[in-house]
Length: 245
Image (cartoon, rainbow, N blue to C red):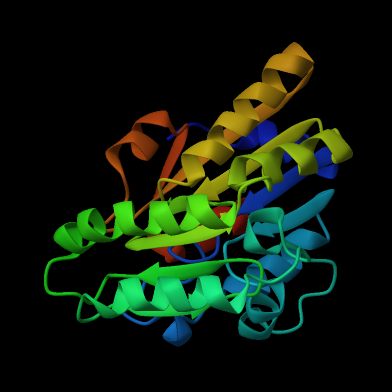
């Protein structure tokens, strides 16, 4: 593991960015059953007072994450990958997505406002369900002016012109201009966040320190682990890492 001492030395000017599901909360069969791992809220609350800012960058609505974490003064949340506040998905599009999902037993549709997700974790053949759903959802998205984002056993229709996780992270970094930045995540979308850190460091040069943390779980992509500077075991490992900063 790469020593995080350099981040600690710059922590007063550091931004810490974290995914939620799979990073602060274990992956569960139904997204509504997710809960933060023990100690997560306390570690976040303590960290907020030590670094420049702490962000959760998540595909969930921000109010859901705030409710799950409880009161953490000063914590910032970029919900829906940064496109929260855009107009809701039209009902007709949600209905089309629901019809596509209904063709496969075990799927779950989650309307989030500005986006709509189809979870296929609980289908008999998740890989087969993913392959069957994608072209149908792509067609719906194209007609409606949306795009399909990949997540952990989920496809999500999001506004075509809105940023994804990488763009949300880039916007935060460009606004804060931190001397150090750390991002932790466990999913394929977190590769975009890793890339955003690398682009920021490339623009700022040697004056900036970035660290990319892969959170290991049963479904963590190999590419994420290979791209990481630091690897931790599950959400409990993230909590321990946060306590060291």
